[in-house]
Image 1 (cartoon, rainbow, N blue to C red):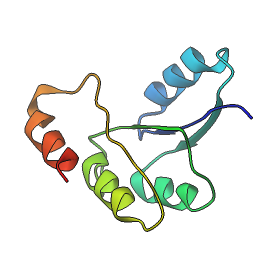
Image 2: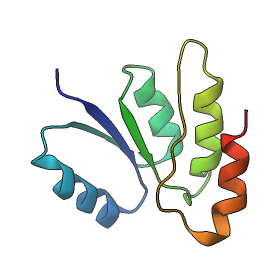
Image 3: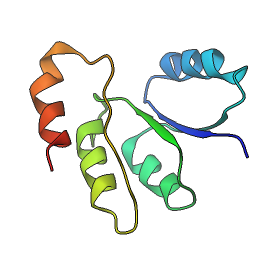
Image 4: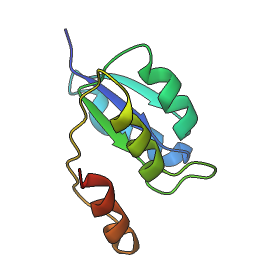
Length: 97
């Protein structure tokens, strides 16, 4: 079984860039264009990794991550790579137990 990655981003250019970068690496790529769609997609499968955009309209990636972490029976570990400086404080607040 191929490792699965869920990409959540409202910007089509960003989504395409991530898909191009990962397509040849053998991953099963799934995508969602907003946080609500990501929550729906997650009801059907458990990805090995979620690449979540932080700044999205309606529900941002931080709130979506909080909701995902609260789902019963799901294990989500937040590991953060590159983040936008203005979101640093908020992102660490999401990681706190």
